Image 1 (cartoon, rainbow, N blue to C red):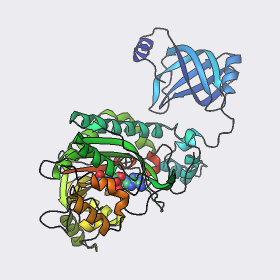
Image 2 (image 1 turned 90 degrees about the vertical axis):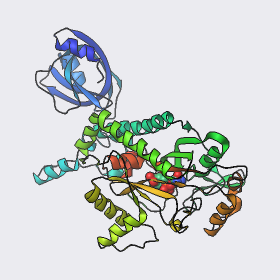
Image 3 (image 1 turned 30 degrees about the vertical axis):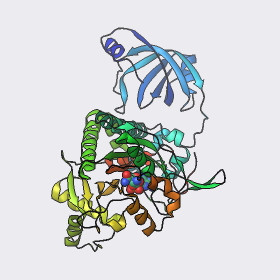
Length: 461
Ligand code: 4AD
């Protein structure tokens, strides 16, 4: 529990420091009839409480796990070190104990079971022990309990830091935070993955991205904007990296000369973010690692930029069949990630100058060869976390590109028109928050980094 470090120091020096702590009864163990040990958890931290005296020890021993209790007592150093590194190095000798909220006696899942690593389960199985393994669906069904594990407490604290760094770095570079509408008239990314709804008699949908409005904000004079907000995608297939609702981190900015200015922002932002996580979230990363072992992400001080053509050549030389003017599938991206890691010693890189045909309608074609576009994707451990580009700011070209991709230009008329009133060259990028955390921590499934995930099958809790 979050004991004041000064109190801990005083207790260590032998002073009788009295504290009051409210937490969840993570574990209760009776020793004989007169003593009980109660492990109290607050957030990711736990502290052992010693309850001595017949009546109070019996009351403690009868507490159901996860009940919320208030404890008042004296802090002291434990006689034996306690298990688990998040445990405080002190214990509390309880003088008063109150149960504030009693949990049902038979929880649908236990925090201990949910906190078990796959390695622990495999080891126990090999030793012929019966350990309960809680599958992902069950964890998500009872997410309120599942979230209490040390790894989950850490994952969402890391996620908060990612978001915080996104804001901090961009604010320090003169960006303005904005909020764009999530109820819009048509698809913003093209394609069919939209949730349709009725907007007082008009067809509408949930925004697939802030794309159109963040560009309009730049044209509205803000020059450099960012947004943190929900993004909705009616994804049909259940994959390890697609959610139907995720948190989008978006950037849009005017360009002086070249879309590489956007890549420069990505570079500064993400290197600062990864440095920050490694430096300031060591405890959280360790807690995640304990349940879900992963290797620290390899990244360079200046992010590697490769051209799409170079990536294609690397894959072809490795014997992978890829269409040089087509998109890379998930396996090819993963393979390229491995090739890049082996050659350049980094698991974080940008792939630039994608073929125009595989990018959205609003992407600017390259002036030297319009078969290619001023666009890029960014990869972590061989999976995409960012896509970005320079945008078309010429309304005629924009309408033509939309039409060529089968988009009804009437549904985006206000967007196209906004470039008729003077529009600076601009570009930007979009990042999925859950993907950043999943891939930085090598978590393997995006549901682990979404508090209450919305996937094609799940709308509850
Ligand atoms: O690649 P996407 O679709 O690009 C856009 O939305 C553009 N408007 C961005 C831009 O400014 N050009 O999505 C951007 C990022 C992806 O790289 C990925 O990290 C994440 O959003 N993402 C998803 N995350 C979770 N579930 C999904 N279904 C996602 N789809 C995209």
